[in-house]
Length: 69
Image (cartoon, rainbow, N blue to C red):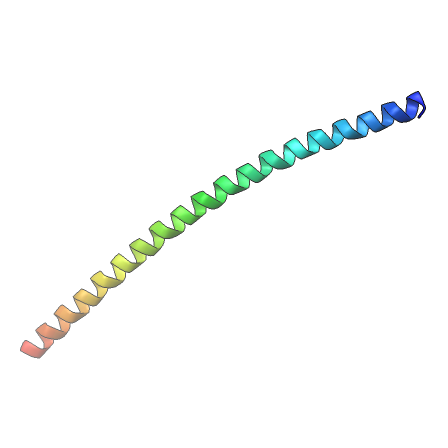
């Protein structure tokens, strides 16, 4: 292998290593974002369920008041 070919191959390998490191970092960032979004989704579902239960309780009370009137 000539010196130029070897240097070219070495440069390409260095590029691949750098790109691989970039992809690893991006992957970790995306995993962190996914975990954050899943946590937020869980919290929103809990809030929605709580709001639904409160609304249902209000409706039940209003029906009871209407029936007593």
